[in-house]
Image (cartoon, rainbow, N blue to C red; front, side, top):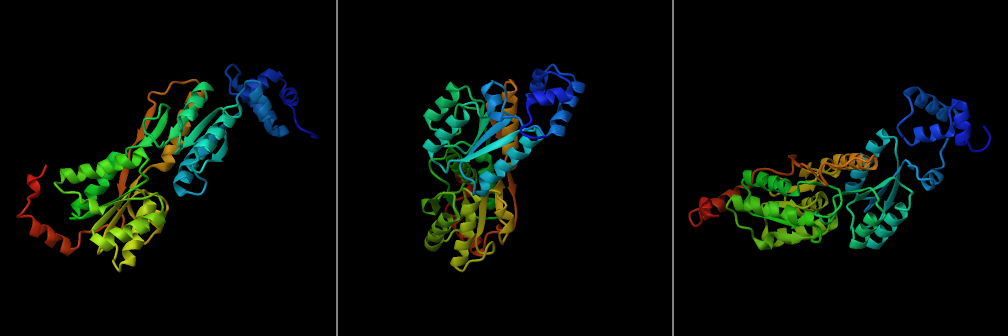
Length: 355
């Protein structure tokens, strides 16, 4: 057909009213299954493409979901967005994706744009979420779900993971392998998740009766380069038998830092990450890591947002998914020298006597 197909043409083809077509396309109740079938067949037959902006201005649903993510290049965010996309595809919704690159003002501008009726709701992936942005979301009554926010107690529906138990499990794995001089490289210090992961490490060490050597603690951003630099310094000065990292990219940097010092992984030094990015399976050796269910986080958040847009009330605003330890080839029994060092120190301080 010449020109843009209109809703009136769809209605005429399906032999129903334009209002019925609108109700079917906006998933409103009232139409019979047969009527819905006739309308959808007419839509497909005529290749009808609804004017999203016009539908939005008239108060109907746009069928669009906004996704505001921190980055469009980092594998972490891409895995979450992949889960979102799959879930929304099943619900026959489309995505509008924006990246903010950790810029709070840019994030607020994107949310304000989407809140103007362009989308039915918005998913925020690892957002900065300045107070002004939160107030904007509330003032506009914008359906919103946050995934892995920088502050875990943000007053919006959110999907996070159990960072504490995840890092406890990673630490305990190294302890069970006989490691005692365990270095820890934290993630970005302004993230609550980084602090919670470090608490999990501290608690596992405490329960094992092991002291934490401050010289073996480092901090850097979630990057390979920073992980490499920080691990080079720690290994060169203090030679731990194992390194725990607050993110996989940091851990992968630590693996190469060990090699730069002429050490073998895991024979001379073990390394554990946190995330289970695709790179963790592609590296050599395969990286032992704490798995965040990134894909599931995206799917879970998308389902929660769709429930909100459908007028349902969530059972909880704090959806917390479990983590799991994935053991690969970057960890092994502590080197013999570590066992000898432990045996030599045991008469002086018994592990069982420590709090």
